Length: 319
Image 1 (cartoon, rainbow, N blue to C red):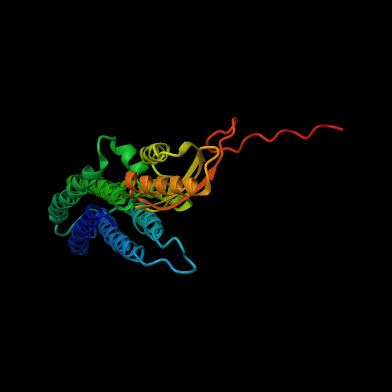
Image 2: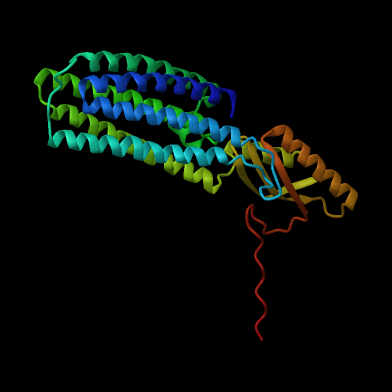
């Protein structure tokens, strides 16, 4: 895991662990549905951060005979599990608790203002975690929009933490609104509605995360910017006539496989072809360091080639 992602995960883990303990204590005193939903949410988030750290550690294992390209995708597997935990433990539980409270409403009779104090304190702590994630993401985001960064990132940790922290802050605000309205009116329906709103939010975020992680698990290509660097590096090598077609695949967040068919000068001898291919590999690694596995196939360019496609095969004459 990149240093920035690791720092954001650890910050979120520390924040959510402290917040979860505080929320469970407040729920024990008040029996607030919103507080219980938020306590479970924070506990699930802390567990999710542990999963991200475990996935990052397991992804560093050396390749073996069965997994010859290594274990980089384990980070995607554990991030997908995070989405499942967020959906089930966080979202569905909050929806159930809110439904139960709406059908059996009761106000907050004991330690009435404890939930408000706890939620405000949790908002402050969660804001520090969210700020850390934003600062670390800005170091790699560049000038792209937040939505594009989250959708196009090949490293899962920062997008996961950003969405989790955003959902956590929004959920805290919803819980605070539900608790305050319950205290003001004595009607527990508002507390239950707050819990259901938190659950709906977590379900939406979890589904979005699952879709993104599924795409990474299936195998996404290098980013457009990375592919442009690779293409320019290959076509800039003496002895390479042009790039016929190229395929890329992320084997992990910082590991890319590059497979390409390269047109060499017609009439080149074997030594010249080998020299051109070796130079092209070196140029690709220099232009895009994530290119860890490079397979370049030399060929002679034939008119009619389109990148990514084979040339059309003439039909056999009819008899």
